[in-house]
Image 1 (spheres, helix red, strand yellow):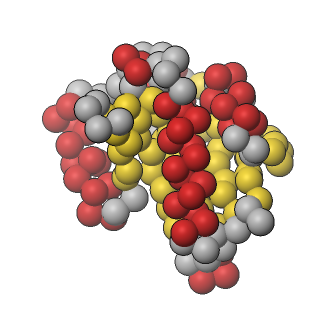
Image 2 (cartoon, rainbow, N blue to C red):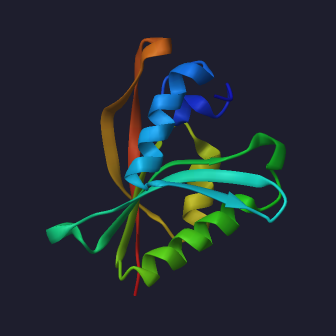
Image 3 (cartoon, rainbow, N blue to C red):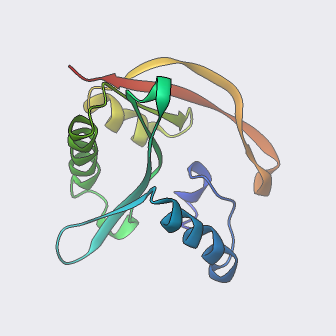
Length: 143
């Protein structure tokens, strides 16, 4: 719920008690992944392995780095681990959406080989700010 990161994530700002049922559900669905350097947890994201016709896709959501760990190249490291996970799970397409306002994340995704596919108008509603945000659809095609 960091004020500079949370506006780009999937949930409205809330207290820990309110978030616990959401967190429990994410763990039950086995879509929440955390990343560690062996000492500290440094990041998290949701990974959704699509099924059936879309079984070639992996969707990344809620990608975030702990602000105390910023500037240590963990975002790039984390993304490389996700790409390896996609390959190990026979995925040929990794996709994500990102706020058009989140320049740092966009730069990271481009550095990792993601390409911009288009703009999703009024894709996210920030209830706490009472406004909509456009998002970019980005993807990485794996060989």
